[in-house]
Image (tube, rainbow, N blue to C red; front, side, top):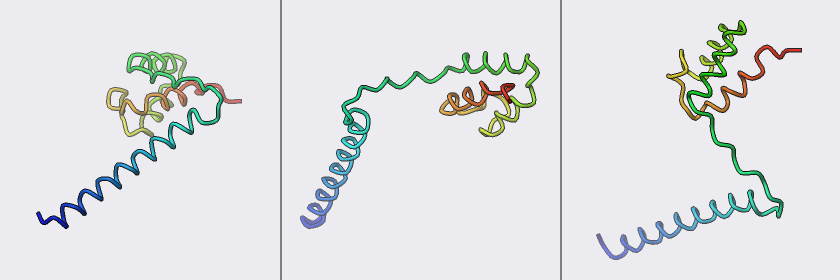
Length: 100
């Protein structure tokens, strides 16, 4: 690698690092910059917690709605759902039967 190519590579790495630092600073500012303390993020629900909520809804007569809900997240059963969707699944499941 020539010295010019090496220098260009180093410069690009520095720019990438600077961009990453700016992104982190922006995120920190959005959380702490307002001067107001915000509640820490909630822990995502576990598979067992989601399963219990969906089982309760199914027992309450919303089996087809539970299946449809899982299908919206690309799963035919809870164990096939991506854990990153658990919180959203729980949020949607909680409103099943609360129409009105």
